[in-house]
Amino acid sequence: MKITTFTIAALLTAFALTACGGQDGGPVSEGVDITLRNTLQDPGEQETSFPGLFGAPDDAFDEFATTSASDVEFPTALAQADTPMGDISGLYEIDVTESAIEFTLLPTADDPFWVNVFGVFPAEKFDRYYLTFDEPHGIEDSSSNNSSVSLRIDSPTVVVVEIGEAYDMNPGTAFTIDLE
Image 1 (cartoon, one colour):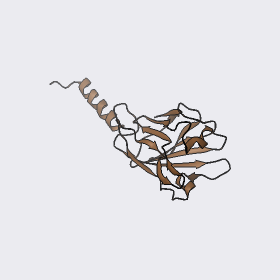
Image 2 (cartoon, one colour):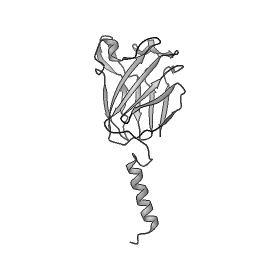
Image 3 (tube, helix red, strand yellow):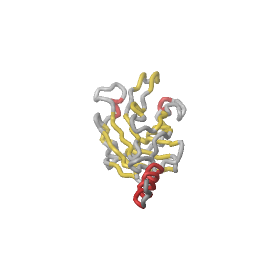
Image 4 (cartoon, one colour):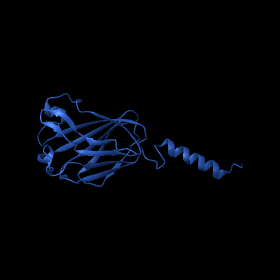
């Protein structure tokens, strides 16, 4: 087999794409462990964890997943059994790919727990999802297809999906954050 400049360039390109998180060059690698924690902040209030609303420790409802090209990492995020409010169904399906984070609202309009949270967010209300990766994520920037949603990069291993003012939280809502 004759090795040409083209062959060497193709091999180097393939290696670079693999090192950058995958074939599409996304900043998140497959097989990375992620911890998910949710917090809420109402207007004029301090940020509090979702389990804190029930008097539980901040990490009580933490969820864990491993990034996968074929599986949704958090198919029923925030689902909890046996809380003081009863069983809570999942609020979002959250899929983390090599190049995006996708959220899809799960509850129907008549869900017994979530029905009271549907509506448009006022100013200074935030719903935050902290994603902590067990290794550096490689995310340098992002863009959202929803103007009420952004991604904050807190550190090389932590990003925060921040849902805020004017977010229309109603059944069927979905958004995507493209990662760079």
